[in-house]
Length: 234
Image 1 (spheres, rainbow, N blue to C red):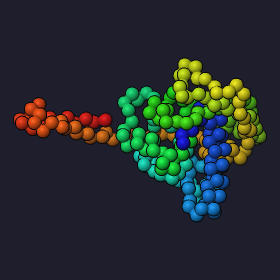
Image 2: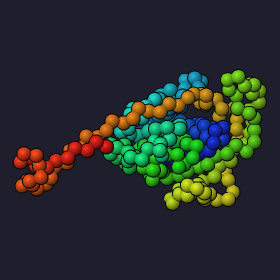
Image 3: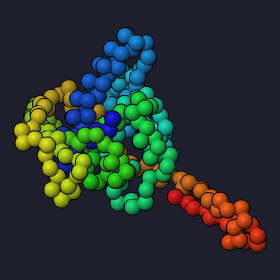
Image 4: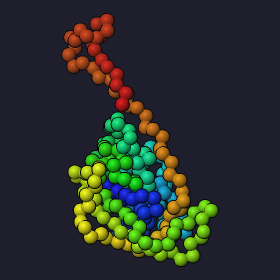
């Protein structure tokens, strides 16, 4: 399962991730008591110290996507996924990454990602996404930050719409329904993550070295009598 939350800066994407994280931790604790296994949240967005201390056994961090490609049996919170899987990259993803994304359901991997626009994300990932929700802050308190006034009372309301992604209209994204869902902005949600953290891009994955050899053993196109072969880096 791959779900993407979209919206402009300060629209409420991280708050929706926070709601998701709370739900996942409660569910994973319930599963541990009932079935005995520990399913973790693997996140590139750091949790607050308070939330982490309460749920440390169910949380793991990653900073580079190379740390999680191939991982199994977990819930991945991937903030600013377009930094790693950018639509500006025209070349296909490596076979290793594509294979992992294609087989996510078999391997028990659920991804909850954010991006400002769905079409900011690489096409290979978009094709495998099941849902996209657009978030918009309807009203509420201002966001705090460096050299900004402190927020004494946290309050507000965010609206969410499901976006049609199969097929997806990049120029005019189509909402699945007219009426949105909503959630309230609360102090609890704002205190789940360090929302001022800067998410950096992962290192570029290494090229795959592929050598293709002609299946005809009598092929004369090779060099000095050798079978024809071609090396591809992709």
